Amino acid sequence: YHGKGQPAYLSTIKDVATNEILVHELTTSLSMPIVYRTLDKLEEALGENLHPEIILHSDQGFHYTHPEYQKRLKDLNIKQSMSRKGNCWDNAPMESFFGHMKDEIDYRQCQTFDELKLLVDEYIYEYNNHRYQWNLKKMTPAQYRSHLIAA
Image 1: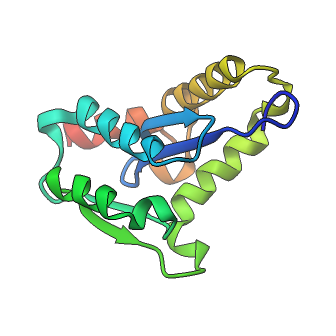
Image 2: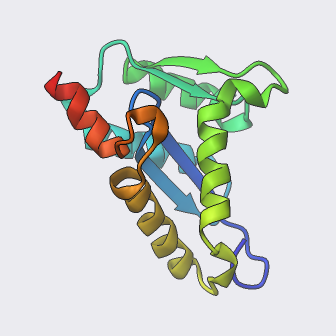
């Protein structure tokens, strides 16, 4: 929430090998376009570099069980994996990211959606490029990706 209790919704795709947030979409509506735009951004960012064995994991929210969303994944050759019903532990990497983000930014200070968007964009940039992580050999997600590519 931002401003005077106005909702905002964040859709992200995280690479669990590097912990990098590959793409994100922040909107004021929880309608289907939030996940479609997130997929569009993934396709735009990775294009031909989408791994042929990519698996996209999510919870069982209505977006991810919607037939059109599942068709779009299939069209992109992305395999879908979903958490067991009512089991947040299956989606722990994403839940962990959201928990850290909520702890580390003061999103309630934002009066407008544009302020919130800037704050989230900056946080994700910092998370990917400047936040060292113990389980990544004390590297940032971006450094760890480069490390894996060079290996």
